[in-house]
Image (cartoon, rainbow, N blue to C red; front, top):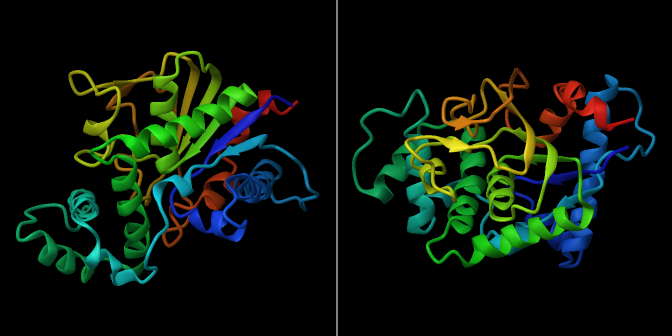
Length: 277
């Protein structure tokens, strides 16, 4: 079997804490779960017997900082960069997007009262982690990309699977390290095209409203759920050249973004089969 490296998404700091503040231990714990989830998708739910699919997870959550409050209302007390991400993201939700005005803190509270609980739970993780990664000083961003690049360089995988914010990290990492070459990049629930939150802030910056496939990537497959409020827009071909395949899935309107659902839905069977011999 060819090597496959995973790049995780939001909300994974607790693995670091549970592993005694060990990034290596956290990466292994995440890998074990990804193997179980992917096994379900590849075998139509056949019982899992410790099959190994993922070579290693590129773990970076500890570099973004520890979350301080797990309550949903923490969104209202986020720092200003996180609240700005929250409002910019909420503007793109169909039910809320038009005509949002008002003081940032008050607007944050207004939005909270109008979002479903699952959307608030997503926002309280997504917004601070995006703000931390894309911070103005660039220090955290460089450290995260360095950690992911080191994992890819050490393993030299044929495939990189990147979920959620991890798709942004993987995209920028592959651009920043042209020696890293992969046959297949799979992005799951990717916010890469999200305007005013991610897209315009990417490095390298889009040119004339278009991003491009990293030069070291052979094939790029993007998978997005129709209800995923992180994958806005769901299809990346409208803002990136070089996306070879778009796959739309219908996971679960209440559980629309988790890597468990994406890996287990069966959508990766076709692109991964050549690498699972």
